[in-house]
Image 1: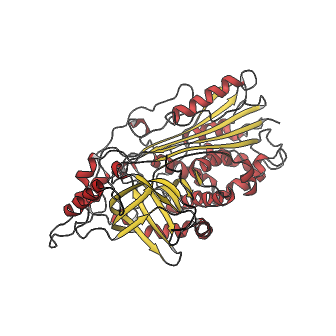
Image 2: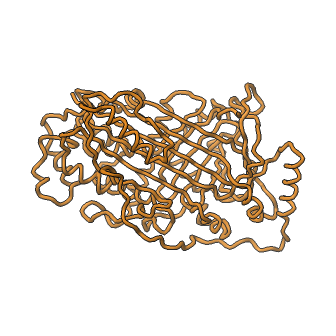
Length: 534
């Protein structure tokens, strides 16, 4: 039985600049700074409120030829790499418009998967992973699945028309890579709080240094092992993947080096040695997904205001206390309190008007309360929370974090009902590589439809010799503050009446890094105890 090692390789470097001041800074210099900022916030009461706009036109970014990794995948990036700008899929593979119901269902599926996975991983001090990267790789498996494997994987998405699923998911991933709102597919509405944001906030969000997203899929196969041509066409055209041949049998060490190098290149060297042990010689394919995300805060943190402070895992004022590096900022932030759910949500927007880090925290938060809230959250409830947010003047204290996570997902995914893909008896990935490629392949046309025809015709035929050996997931996630020069020029945007919200991230909370136009959750985190201050 051949082995398919599915390596999901994720990384997030979230570099954050902001101007931030805290409520309880303890040095005379800091107090003097805050007093000066407060004086600068005093504006005559008769000053008119800023006008509101729906969106700000952004300059068109020229399209350049695609950047290709040597002999491998389509490397997609957005910052300093205009090659990632959207290229419409061929008519044979894609609709010409965004199907919002299916798009929203995909986004809901990603959150559902994240929330379910988070509950099955068990308690840890912190948990951070990229549901988008995992689900992206599951979609590539779904594309080539039959039988029980197809049933289990399609249940992740809850969409019966899997051809439309792949078309719309491909469009969403293209939109994710766009560096400006202009590149997003028409038909994706603005988040309510963005649509009602003052013009000044929108202009600040469009300052240089917008977010950078780098997404790549790599398919590594054994020399001489042939793929279904329709499968290969679809993963290239819809998911931007391509093929690289490796000799797992004759040179497993070289194959491991090449794959680790590919991951390092596609994560800006933030993730290395994703495959740390020898690759079994029976391996016939490795599927790798790399996600790199880097963004700057819309409102910058003051580096000099960061200092050790208390974090209370079991609730404010309780023991034990963890000393963490606490950052602080002040400005206009989307915010909402939900008394039915018993929680508050604040958004820390990134420059570019595209992505936001949402922090959801129970009113009287603790590890137990956060776990209870997590079980009650659904995609619909999260979307309702975000839709009710509006900008308010706030002081925000938030822990500085550098989190690394590496986990083998086989066991937990078996508990989640996805055990078939790991079973030598029940697994069927015969549309990925098979000796029984349907005659529909020779007809050309839409390879997605060809794969569907092959799936329907496959009942009763021999199953594939491919089986998933493991799913390896690794994340590097950084939240920090950079640059104090921006503080002096940005405090003037604070409202004349001063802040009316104080948000302190000193008790457990949930983190969602979300691409707002597509509603895709890039990163999902449960922060029960941040890293201790050094």
